[in-house]
Image 1 (tube, helix red, strand yellow):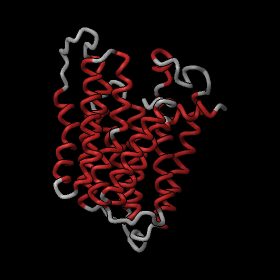
Image 2 (spheres, one colour; image 1 turned 60 degrees about the vertical axis):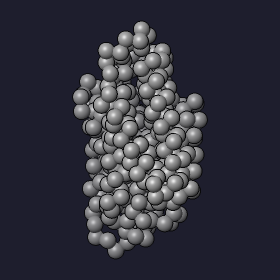
Image 3 (cartoon, helix red, strand yellow; image 1 turned 180 degrees about the horizontal axis):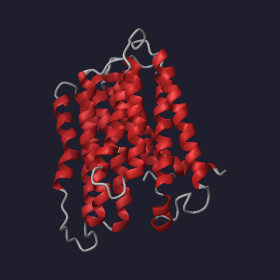
Image 4 (spheres, one colour; image 1 turned 135 degrees about the vertical axis):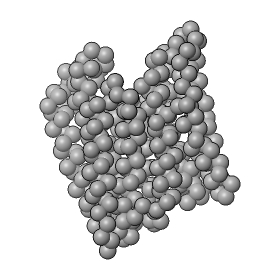
Length: 300
């Protein structure tokens, strides 16, 4: 099968955002980088993401045949059954890799916590629920956010055996960002983009996107490096909101892709707080890499 089909099914352009999720959870949990457990865990989270995207296409096959005929299943490039088999296989491999990471992670060794297992099963459950029920579901933004929060949760428990308060802070910031992002992604079609008549004004969603910025300002007062990803994140919010409320209809995808890439910068605020300039630069590189890859493989 053509590699391009696999890349499209897995939406691999967004994988840098998953990697920064793992990094920030580990960093806030006090795990040294690099150390044993990082590589298998990062690989597992990326594979979970790919499995979720495969299963998303399986669940959306009928919708895509009517509305998104370019998707691989809808275009007849691969069968629905084969994609589902890949999704199940990837999930099994990812679960095994989480177990390997848990056994290798120095801080987690000796801990009797089953948090890694519970959070991993929660991640799988959230992925399945979202993929099967996200269409016409008012709670789908919350379920989508729960998927990403489960990545942070699993990473913290797997690498350290604990869930420190700073990780909860990062999870709250990520929750706000993802609710706002997913709401815009689902409902921006209700805006009259062409005429400039904005009867639908999702001010509360915009406020959610801005809450992590406020947290970043607070962290930046003690760690100036935070202002590097924070400044770029402010530009992301302004640009995406402008495209969605004043740009042409064709700009929708670009705006949502930009907000997805912004996940790296949310992580970057906390990475900079822990690791200083090196954490800020790591997040900015991941942000740029996401945007670059989205030029070749659609992120939405």
